[in-house]
Image (cartoon, rainbow, N blue to C red):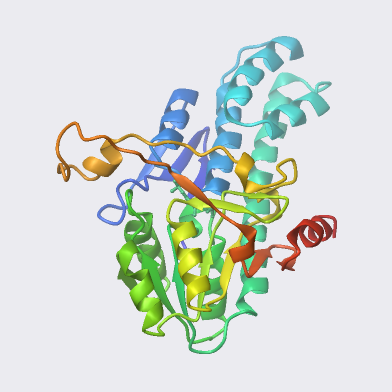
Length: 333
Ligand SMILES: CSC[C@@H](O)[C@@H](O)C(=O)COP(=O)(O)O
């Protein structure tokens, strides 16, 4: 994407308010921890990598106006900010505890900016590796938004499409709407259209029919967490798509940075699933679409079993089953 999803702007965090897209393109500014937390919680900034960046910049924000005179007082303030949001910044502070506080603030900001730079490089590398899986004139189905808006600028699943398109490959994309918050409809189609990529929007429940009609050559989705055995957590509905892809003999690819791999988890059964508010289902965008008071169950993510994943595209290369060995080898490469 040409626009920057999240960045540091003179002592504040500037981010695109993704809840307003595609109707309104607006930057918002967070100048303290509560506003940063609110932005993450309300999905103004969303997608695993972009949330990580918001956490790192938020921790810096938490101490930017600190009046602490000693490292100990400064570290206590940073800890309460970083505990809440992120830990890489805390480690950096500990490693630089000999510095004067003003210098330390600059070191921490540099670390947060380095996280953004790493994220950008990671996205580009995923794109380069992934585009080798695409053939001329392929149509790809994607779910949710694993694009520039979910990272610092190029995305993971969408990075593959951006890279292929940039390299001159003719590709088309079908984007699942992605109930209940419509990240596919609002964000993925918007990003792809901005890039000039041919995109068609479908409701989630149309994917089987579209596959049956032979319109899809592969599925590419992002991931929020991947267990050691390759089980993959991503936006709710991803598992449905994987089952449909398997039933139609269509390759199902996951694109994610190696930082998404969590080797502490043997399988996806250990991944906790966030529950979201009932109103996101019954009143998503203002209008009540179910009887008032109806019971709602709304898991935000699901876990696709590794057996349904054809390959995992990372910034270090592409891993295939058996994932436990191959992901390990990739991480250490
Ligand atoms: C590039 S990250 C991929 C994911 O974070 C993405 O597909 C997803 O599940 C986003 O969910 P969201 O709730 O919008 O943050």
